[in-house]
Length: 312
View 1 (tube, one colour):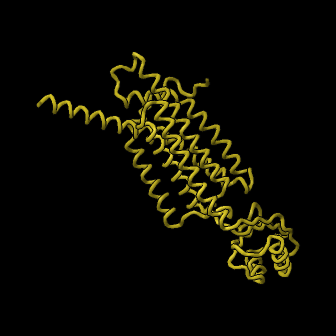
View 2: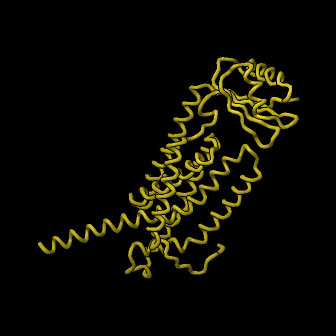
């Protein structure tokens, strides 16, 4: 295995109080943004009709809106898609069939002379029930993933604390990613949901590697006499090269997708970029810090109880 660090001995766990402060700030910003602005859901989750149009010459949004006003389908959302000549038009739910809607949109835009020649590249229709079902399924997917993580870690490492700490790290990552989506006005779509589930697995994988090294180390003579915090800090340092290499390669791949993958993959790649950073950070400073403080709290209570019994 490639070793980026030669016998690292960084005091990660010792700096966890500062990490708590940073995480608290990020979570407040993320939750505040989600509360005030909310998420902008893709048509897959809200229902409605999506029309992708490519114009011969770059049009103005006002001209597109003026053309659509002729068919009176309600307030539409018009967004540039990839370049200045291609646009996505999102129309509210309607009882009109997709074929009829295509004809009406084409006719309305054709009447606006300033738009020039254009081509309808695709049209998608999602009913209201499908949109609601997908929202529920998205929530279930994330919740079931977290429950599975909790059960697996509690069973594999015989540590409920470790499972809860890992889930806490996952929640931390998901909230920050969703807050970043809301803050930047990006859409929550099915590819974004896939990216979130990927980040959940990525974050937990790093945590499991650190936990596994901790379990191996605790049976070694060199770890005797060390506190739990020191043992976990050693485990994190020993797996640091692997963590950084994994994070770096994933980050570079996601960044390339973000810049060169096109509009369709942009939001997916954006969540991956944010998630890789928070996932690596949370393995050390959320999952690791929580289990250390929890263990120290339990040990402190046990020590006080023994001391009280000895006095009695």
